[in-house]
Image 1 (cartoon, helix red, strand yellow):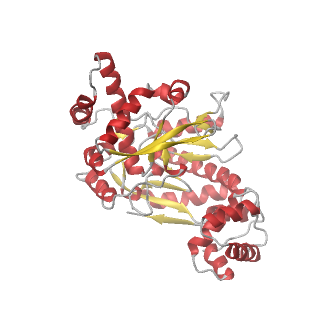
Image 2 (cartoon, one colour):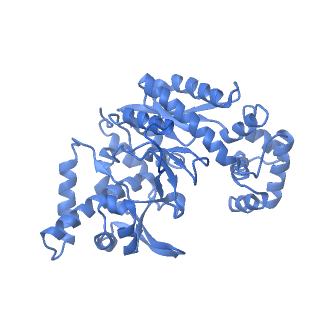
Image 3 (cartoon, rainbow, N blue to C red):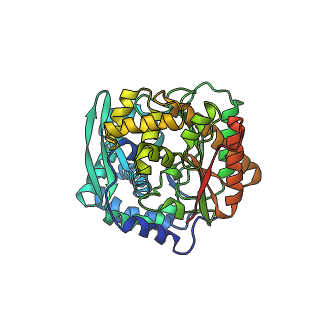
Length: 416
């Protein structure tokens, strides 16, 4: 199966190259090194290896012996493939600046990545104008992490390989957030654990199919198996708001669509607390009651108010989102007037994520049965465009089944 059409790679590159700017420097836009590779049988493998040797390895190897050069080659390949991923995902690639991290942490050891060659390559790339490198900041009990992002000079060399780079689809598929911000497999689960079997079935089905940023579908819990179980795959990190990149990718060479739940956490909250219908556009309804025209501002309020576990913290978070104390109070009062049974400031977002993760997982499992590729995208799924009708019906059906009521969900669609 193929993920490219004639000039499709050029089309995607044109989208990201049209207006070059650096990603936002926050944790949402940071990415660790992944175990990436060129797809088996890739037509670009020879070209990529030639680029690696002539443009990067030969000029940077210095007086290293053959063993050291081979080790450097391995590091160059890992870093170039990851830089290709982040230039499309609009993420900074994290480069920890502590040798202890590389010797003690799971992922560097899994990738065969060590401190000195990594540092040498990143500094060489910066010196020759191939990356923007931000120096690491020291945090308590954490290594300082430099962040790298390709310059247009490097993007011009890497863009043609992006659609043939993938992360191996292999376990662990069920993982939990670690204290230091990484992820680890949930330990001690038997092989016949239902969620373990379900995630394995989804990933086995997806293995032969092709899509941009291909990688495993994982169920991620926030800090324990009862908090924030969300489906994640690297595909959903592709941007699609300021630049319409993700919706213009392909699944098995076909155009895609995204089927999205509308105001889903709010609808789940009201369904759980009384089976109440939020209506067609609850954000506009509450905004009108509050005298606030910006629907986006209302949406931000609900995201914070349902995600936070207390009102004071939510007020501070809303202020950072551009919501004044006055508007915060107006929106709180309007929300509870329109929806008296709505629960705010009690950490509902964690429960909503659990419901949402289960619903999307069940949609994907039905897709496996039907032979339809479904990729999770936050509170939506991406499917081939000709499956848009099936996806709309299945999303609504699984929502109703999970919440044990019908008619309260709303789905919207997005096409290229």
